[in-house]
Image (cartoon, rainbow, N blue to C red; front, side, top):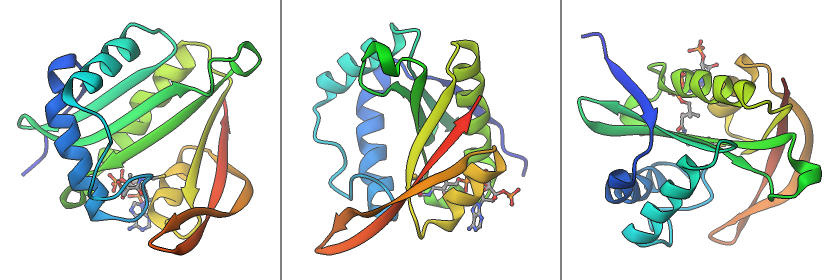
Amino acid sequence: MPMNIIYREAETSDAGKFLEYCKRVGGESDNLTFGPEGLPFSISQTADYIRKVSGNPESAMILAFDEGELIGSGAISSVSGRARFSHRKELAITVRKDYWRKGVGTGLMKVLIDFARKNGTEVLELQVRSDNESAIGLYKKFGFEKIGTYKNFFKIDGEYFDADFMNLYL
Ligand SMILES: CC(C)(COP(=O)(O)OP(=O)(O)OC[C@H]1O[C@@H](n2cnc3c(N)ncnc32)[C@H](O)[C@@H]1OP(=O)(O)O)[C@@H](O)C(=O)NCCC(=O)NCCS
């Protein structure tokens, strides 16, 4: 059956659903900055964060839904709020495991890159575990290039993993 995925900006009322989603995707791979515990924020803190992001033309939080179910997320955020970094933005993306390899990551990337182009971003940057071939494949498909390797970027249950730093010059 063809999927009808809706991509839209996060709303404050998505906060609870988003926190549950993070626990789920955090437990489905060791590729994220968090595990099955999810993010260390309450629903109201997350709603405040969503309000802040949606009120800032420099940042975006995009959610992907299939029949009302949250199945993917992506974000564009400022590097540190410093004026001298304002041409750069960070990109992050996750997709629920039962939706991998169905084009949802591609759909999110298109929306996020389009948003970044429109707000005048010059460099999109991200960090990805060096052994995360799926994500690296997705980023290369959109023109991201590897600019270096950070040795021991992640420490997961006592084990170290390198990260590739990748940039897209818009
Ligand atoms: C990485 C991730 C976001 C990809 O999302 P997705 O919805 O599966 O991606 P798509 O179906 O749109 O695939 C896009 C491209 O990614 C690459 N890709 C995706 N899965 C792949 C796999 N298993 N092996 C190799 N390449 C893969 C391919 O280049 C693919 O393009 P193609 O289908 O034209 O060959 C998803 O696997 C995920 O959420 N993984 C866990 C969390 C994560 O790693 N996030 C990134 C952290 S930096």
